[in-house]
Figure 1 (cartoon, one colour):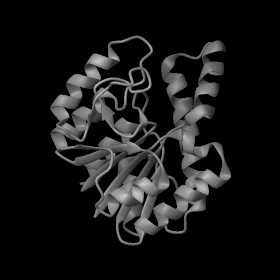
Figure 2: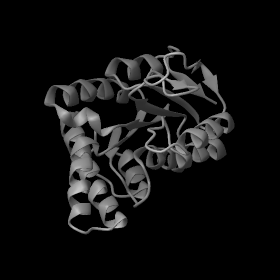
Figure 3: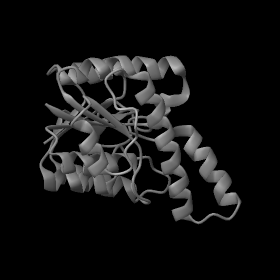
Figure 4: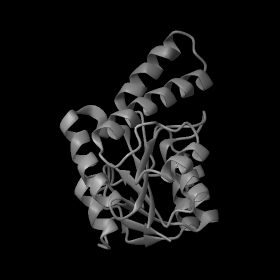
Amino acid sequence: MKIVLSLGGSVFEGVERIREFANVLDEIAEENKLFVVVGGGKMARELIEKARNLGANEVMCDYLGIAVTRINAMLLAFAMKNSAKRIPENFIEAEELSKNYKAVVMGGTFPGHTTDATAALLAEFVGADLFLNATSVDGIYSEDPRKNPNAYKFEKISPRELLMLVAKEQAKAGVNVVMDILAVKILERSKIKAVVFRGEPENIKRIVNGEKIGTLVI
């Protein structure tokens, strides 16, 4: 099976945390072709804020964020046994590396694209069988469950329904949505099966082994 995983930058705030993910991803890569797209996390947010204060425009800030994601990708790749140690800068390089390695880890590619959007585009490009979106919540809800404890969790949702939900939430100021609009649109047109779940190492393994957790987008 060919798998693309979108992994947030919060993973990279501790060595042991990185090692936990690396061990599980190595195990998954033994029997599957694995691509991982990582985010910038706290370091990216802090550096981008400094850059803004120094007069950088948003495209410059995006490039700064992309650089941080590639540093994080290097950390994860170094911790893995089955990953290429070179970090691709685009999808063509990623696919070429995958011919010789069981796993490929990369960061951002282009300004304006979130980690989720980049991962969804990569999934479409390589013809992935499964797109995994590791988040801070355990699935997709009708509203932010951290703000509304009565929010309804979807066991299954279509890309069209998810697009409507994300568009509604993104219209609210300061909201943190579970997936951005571009990523959902890519999933809709590519028809790649996706799972949104809480980003813990054991959860990744559970999904790949066929267990039903999180929210299935299909």
